[in-house]
Length: 50
Image 1 (cartoon, one colour):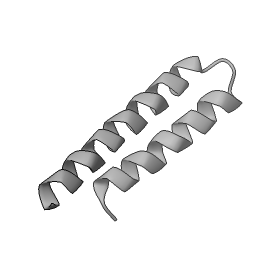
Image 2 (cartoon, rainbow, N blue to C red):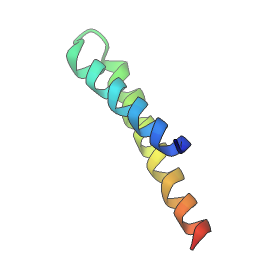
Image 3 (cartoon, rainbow, N blue to C red):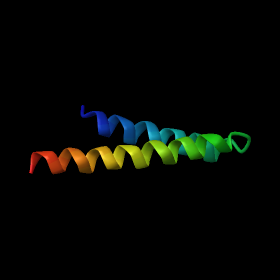
């Protein structure tokens, strides 16, 4: 499994947990940050292969 896909999955899980737990708003920001980083890594990885 590619590392960027694992990061996307982790980001989505953190985002869902952050929404589900109202006291843990920082999880939402961590989830968003992980998603953005994983998308950037995915795009950079695709750019190298082409």
